[in-house]
Image (cartoon, rainbow, N blue to C red):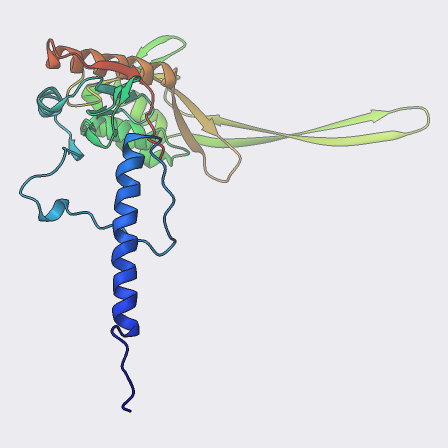
Length: 281
């Protein structure tokens, strides 16, 4: 008798089993969606999203980025859903609108956002560079020359004209004096040397520099007070310029940005907070 062949070969059986598993998995997922939102599936089970093949997306999600406050406000107003919120980071001067954050009773996916990063002005960029660390005399002198119309200089005796302040910075020199002390005692004698290093200039050196500028394109002009310091630890003097109360300026600018956004969004029901929002899975 000829050998009887099986009705289904191994591949056909595996295909049927796979189809049955898919049907069971789909049923389990549908049930879980209505119940506890948790389902157990085989480790090799893969989901395939059919959204790319549909004429429309299921929901809006993405990120819009702009340096323009009006564009940010218009986009956020047009796309905000219930519970939408804006988070402002004072340290980075950045505002993030989470447009589908939702409410505690009905949370959203929080993956549809708009981000505003205002453009810093050239003057504020120059200020940040010169206050970032130690500077050469030439760098500070050139900073003062380039931004003369923005600065007012003072020392203990009062205001100094910018040309005199610039000349003072260029003429800083380091002087070292050595003092020898000798002490005689009944049973011993000690000798020590002290070196005193001072920085001086032929012109009156400014102690404070007032720098006025508009820090960001959408914010008002403000005045920054810089304290000048001279470091004498090396062969040539180094100069530091430190912004007094920098953190306070950052907080005030963040508050001003929040006010500008609120005004630009009009009656839109969007809450504004200080801080960052992190979405967790």
